[in-house]
Image 1 (cartoon, rainbow over the protein chains, first blue to last red):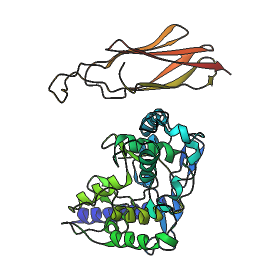
Image 2: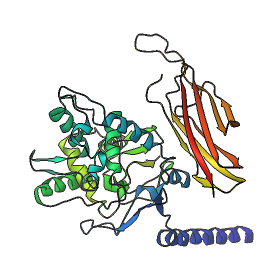
Image 3: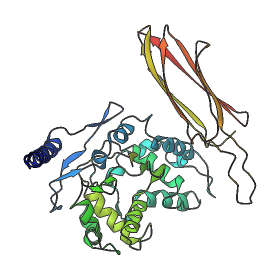
Length: 287
Length: 109
């Protein structure tokens, strides 16, 4: 009897220590992400005012295991960089009826696009539409190169997306939520908070109410998209934002929207804006 | 020559004489196993990196024989003692006869 009571006391004590440990970890022992010993990444930032239910936005990197985190700290170890190298080759490749490569117009190289990734998706005044990186790349291919459009989450597309996004690495995400995109942003917010599928879950149920806790063998993140295209150990390739949305929707047994659809554009805008204050990490490494 | 093959090597630019340094190498390569078939049912011939060597000023530092069941993009990390300034040369041999090479110099200081 005495022994079992003692055990119980010990158990309670260890639970209490764990609880304290967790709070202390989030405040003090934050792991720091510095890539190649030079690019400092903001992994914790105060939440933008329009996020009613969060005080702090946190990069998905924080939720990963030490080994996975280490992969992103050095470009040599980051498997996503293999695809960036492939895109560097594709940059000079002439394709389509106009006989042009990317380099034919963009003479400054991919570096011309420094800063672009931090503002996407954004309103394209000329096309009167919300534009993501994929939209920009395919517009170039179909209208200026006379080449075939790339598949949304195809290997060519995610690699080129990673190369262009890489130029903005370390810059602070600043996605506009007002002006011409205000309605789309509201639509995206609505999708974010709407329960869907047989499991009847909204994005918020996992990524807002339960981030940091385990979902099967995995730790839930806030679902930030600042690191996309992301190299996932799970499928050993780069993954697009909307491809990831699709995966999430399948997981809750819902019928996913199509990649490139208006719904996913709206959702991408809203989710990207939830990361305002974090920095671009593309190509990040996750599991 | 297989498509999209690119060797990458990371060697510190300088080290003190006698230092043990860490070398990382990675080659993007399909490592076609020879077990797969194409759309028409023909076997795709095996094409893997079967040998890797690293030499320092002509002297062998490390070599490896690779066989089937090694994943795509083989990665090697190993340590080497640097007695003097010189060049590391790296060589990957492909089943199809291709040789991929890379070279890195290291200074003493």
